[in-house]
Image 1 (tube, rainbow, N blue to C red):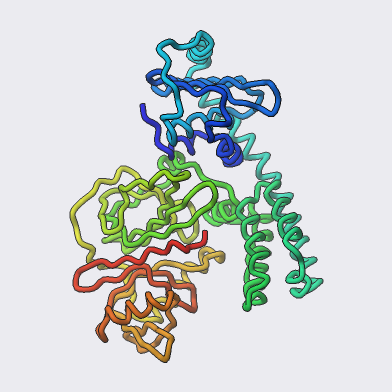
Image 2 (spheres, rainbow, N blue to C red):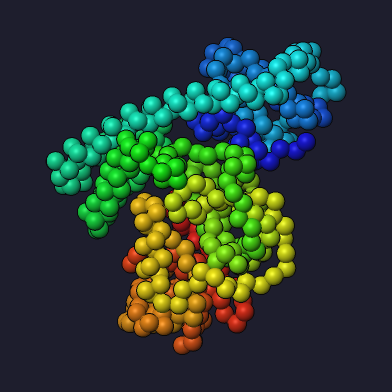
Length: 440
């Protein structure tokens, strides 16, 4: 059985364990790397003389690690799988299998049944989630106090703080299992020297305060909003759970655009889709490690028929694909399109009412015009309202030239003040604008 990168990520008991595994995905960290058919084994060096022995049977999904890590699979086993995925040539192929590998995997075969292990994993996961929620609650209280102190001392005090100040508090949030918010704190620290720092700070402080107050009242909130708050904090939903529990949304799904970012050591791809009949946008996040290429399945311009399963949220957008099959079709949007700027405003207000942390939302604009005023570019709808375009100047000029004074259909993001174009339709052609500078 060949494991995919996504399967390895899903195999990890939690994200911190996976992050620690990435550090070991280097052949020099290992004294031994070997394989024989579906069997892999290795010996990982430690800071002392001790070496941890790791073995796995890929076909029968049997695993062994003699490390003392309480959570299994541990970082050593995950690193071995990632190394084999990334650098199979680093593994020797001896003719004989060592006795310790046979013994370890035989013992794994006689361990509890899959059902017993799944039942235990389920109860362990519940206990771990309860512990995590308790830690997140402590972090939410800590964040609330930090925000009150910041408001009391003023924005000027925040702007004057050095990098260590931001990193220290971000680390505290990470320790409280609030990795999603820790990223935002670090981002605030990076914004403090910008020309528009005061407005950006106020936006972030308001969002963070709303989150902390919402978390402390989780029990009073509807399920979808609870799920949104947990995801904003950094609690990930398992893909297999979504496929089982989230209702499928069947449609013809067109891949309109992609964006790329880097979250060392991962690369992230945002795949933007549009449902032909539902008129519904969707966002699929794809991950690749190191130099591993992304799955070519979801190329821009392709069309897929089947279900998407959306993450729980009052304004659901992110989704995972179910059993989708490729079809030969051309996008002719019949639902969910906007032809006016008022329509954009109403749609964004609806998304914002569902999730107040929404920064931008995707829309399909039908037959809008490009307007140039000096070196600024705008889109104008049928209601004669106009809004600025957020795009590099060369891209704005390209769109202006592409339109030639005629209306274009656009797909992009609206954040309440600016429109970021991601794709355009001209003479029946889809023209997509990849954005390698996207931030996560």
